[in-house]
Image 1 (cartoon, rainbow, N blue to C red):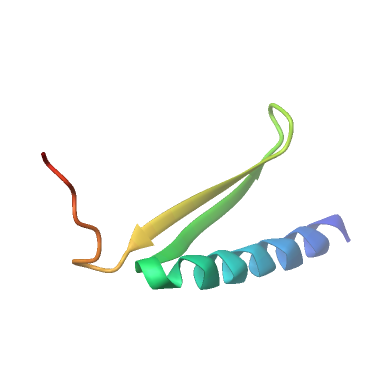
Image 2: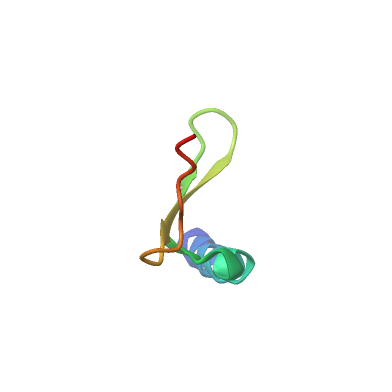
Length: 57
């Protein structure tokens, strides 16, 4: 039961993060829960090609 709840929460978080970062051209490529020091959600993001421009000045 616990893993089913975690999978539902994980799917919902991925959907919510994808919606939130869509305008910036970012999307979720990975999401992990870590409870080694408190509870953390680790989100790995990727960008559509050509979206992120680095300011080298």
